[in-house]
Length: 77
Ligand SMILES: [Zn+2]
Image (cartoon, rainbow, N blue to C red; front, side):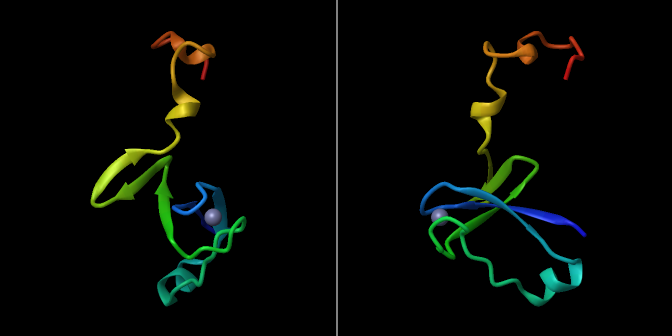
């Protein structure tokens, strides 16, 4: 079953929703698990579509300098 990731515009919470493609096509009534808001962005691979523009909403996890990913091409992760 595919997992869909959502970002709450109200409180900034990230959460995942499991649903079949059929269920998604029929429309899911998804609320933020933290604040209950329906004001959500769907996130695709760490990118949320905001006003037609892809924005990296997880940049804090991929910034250089803090982990093993600081060296490009090292292949460690
Ligand atoms: Zn929320």
